[in-house]
Amino acid sequence: MAKGPHAFRTISEAAEELGVPQHVLRFWETKFSFIRPMKRAGGRRFYRPQDIAVLRGVRALLHDEGYTIKGVQKLHKEQGVRRLAGAGAGEGEGGAAPTPLADADFSIGEASDIGGEARDRLTFALADLEAVKARLDGLLKGR
Image 1 (cartoon, helix red, strand yellow):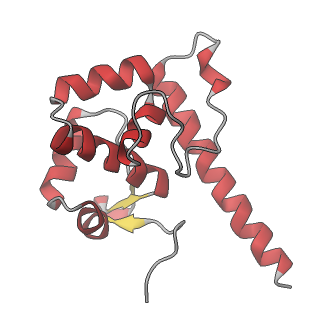
Image 2 (cartoon, rainbow, N blue to C red):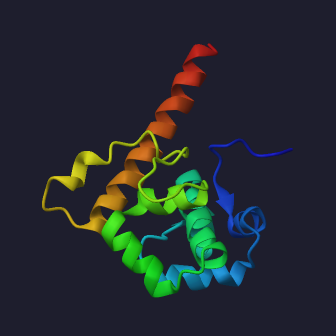
Image 3 (cartoon, rainbow, N blue to C red):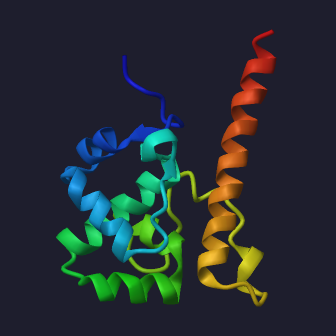
């Protein structure tokens, strides 16, 4: 049985979906502060749909477009997580990503003093909450 588009992925499922070994995902966590999968008991990682979108972008930038790790870090600092997710969706610079991140309101931190990492955390939290709300709405309609 295949998982739905909003289901969390284990590290093995994420690695398979992205076409990279598990140890590469663990390495990217050490190099990119914006990659923070949820960790459960025993340190087991679970990747949210928006995590997969960002990882897909990191993979595309590093493997397909020839960026260095420092280049991806700089791109994130200058343009944010939405640009990274867009890269994974095959978009060029400045496009909106057709991912779970596309519906998030990215204007929260753009006009305030909030830092890039804090903005990313808030964006991920918002996307998580919206996914939970959508599931709850679906369950309530099924009554």
